Length: 639
Image (cartoon, rainbow, N blue to C red; front, side):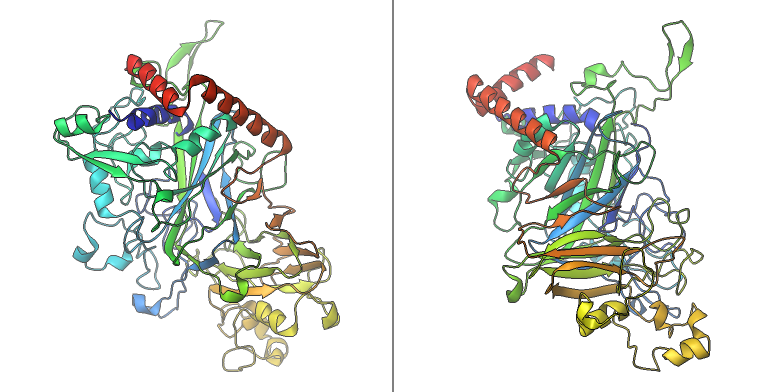
């Protein structure tokens, strides 16, 4: 009898606490998260079921990365864009979460990704149909792509067959469900989704529990946890290294089988899913485990006791071929001490909906407890992107990604997103390294949001300034500038044909005819109106040392917002990116995923000590397999 499902059952029981309380929305900012948005031109999304179950507030997510010509009446009139990152470069992942991590609760951040082929065929964002907006916000029907009239208008991550397997698989009935009435017996019914609602083709049980005991198409990047003593456990159970199994085709209402023999006796079909790392057709697979960053509770912003955003530096995987239509997924899991990890279905009577309890002084108080959300998970996913091979001249070079986060509008209008900023906005690099300048925005922002340039549009550029506190372009000799004339021109103009008077206003028109204040004219290239929402400079070699300051001329609105970046260049060669953001920096420093990075000296020492103790414990108990047998035996007595 195979024991891995029994072992992973315990993992699932453990995560009844670490995955799922109270409102704790999470939003990705770099790469841009969508929170189930598409082309709706309001601050609130319309459809929370479009691609996945975020559990987030509707006022969040970045709009479709597409242009919006005013006369667009057909999807062919609208161009959408994807970010393209080079393999083995470091990508800063940025997010904000409403609740802290580890002070008032137990928590995890689970970072995963998947791409075309493994996640599904024809993975896509959903394509706007015209310039009006709200044309690609519907949930995909329960049909195959070939049976849909216009499949491209629907976003798709997981595929229909994956959801069908979830819909037909017996759910884990040993999981803690409190007093929730689950209206079915398959994996689409969970404590957080008792009615079996459909969110794209996501599997609700797989979404709600980690590590999942069956197959998941998502490749682990990192687990950031408030209890790093579990790091060896997470890494061992990750599908990066651990085979997963499944029993499909059952039509009874019993708990799911624990072995191949039991599965086949009950009429099911036992399926094995080898680990990702054992299959050459999948990209490099490693998992990091770090201490989770924390933030001020009920503040969607910087980390706690710091000026830094919550950030993880992901060293992008390598593979024999380019990875297309990839999606990054972040799940934020929180719980409190009332639901310890050992809770099972036997504890369902211990928590009630909005109970009335007596205090020590005999005063009855009514508590705000929603048992569907006591222990809860939130989620955000990015727009699709590609991970591509490096050209030959970059094979042995360090490549740093510089992107833009945020969207058009003031701080109230962009909730629960953020205003513009560079990612990172304070970076240390070495002479001879390469910087890959690349960013994307959207033309489907709310039309009335504040900002410069054509209404509803995101645009950013880079011009050099003399010092951080300046807000006008540097006008000294070129020998003192960071880049040469050509690169400086490209970063400032971002692809606009400045010298063509049919495309852009001339300098004389801007000043003498006061065209500079014509915000909506496409010819106002001084406001970047003729530029595409997507800019990709490509990697640029750093040829001189020093400290250099740059800003976006369009979004650096003095009293309202400052979109600036500091680039410090030394002669010291460093294998990894060094990110010291001044006001949006890293809360967990960049590491290669094959190692467990050190968030801080204390955190690192604590982890090493825990690992040593675990190794000694395993040796003392007779090895991993014996411990698994012991756990399974203990679990069987509880069941």
